[in-house]
Length: 325
Ligand code: UT7
Image 1 (cartoon, protein in one colour):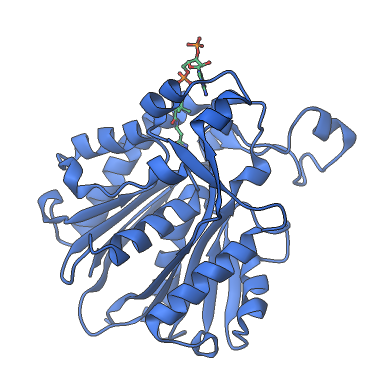
Image 2 (cartoon, helix red, strand yellow):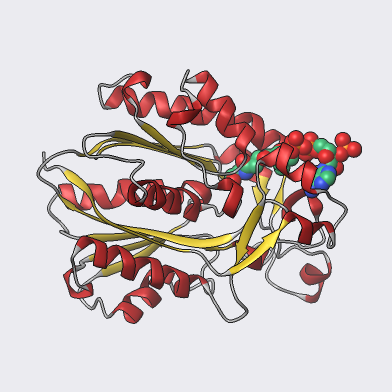
């Protein structure tokens, strides 16, 4: 079996910062509530004319440079997103054109906050079978475009950004295991009801604010803790490893209390958990992508380290991936 690993990483965060103090002026909330309940201090927002593919492009270029590859070397591009530039075509195709990656096969994956982990698992399969050689995997989101800025239950949570990796065959280390799971019976807990075939855009869907994401946060919270801990255990078992073998966990950054409760279940000290939620909030598929990039580039991940990606989101969907660096 070929060893498939990450050979390049990149990220992009928009410049505009929205602080908790800014949100206090928009809805009935407080800096104290947001920090203690979520761990978020600020988040980034895309500029007026900045869309998901623009952010994906910046992260992708950085990842390609970091890998020492050219766009022409790519034969696969997968973008994980739930906030594409438009319902179709795929962001991956728009990105392909912007990069000039003419040889690449391109598609998006809709697996919400677990999308980046799903996309890595899919790309790995293609490379392992020899179908493709160099894959660009991007997690990119403009969640601000589907956030209801009048709903304090959700508007304090989300942000925009993009992270990217290049996957290819490596001589040592690489992806040791992946695990994915889904439970569509709980699809109603987190969704955007308007804009699809069930509720196409109309005056009524606009008036009912159906084009914004809706979440039953409390239910999701409880499920996230249990499922993320279980997903980590399954992925580790598949890799023939134990929790204590992990050097760094890159969890989905939805809520610091979810992350710490999951870490407690796995008996992992907080030093082994990478966090960027304080700066960026929940960026769905871009959260794990940017966190992995930052952790690697800042030296938190060293050669030989065992890294666990662990994500959970709307669907419900979840995914974990063990990588030897
Ligand atoms: O990304 C993938 C999936 N998403 C997640 O994993 C998110 C999971 N859920 C969560 O992170 C948490 O459930 C939230 C952060 C969304 C909410 O925290 P919570 O501790 O579950 O709060 P809650 O929903 O039970 O609400 C507690 C109280 C309520 O007031 P009452 O009914 O007790 O009077 C809310 O109305 O907090 C109130 N509240 C707020 N207060 C101030 C809700 N949002 C706010 C707010 N500011 N922004």
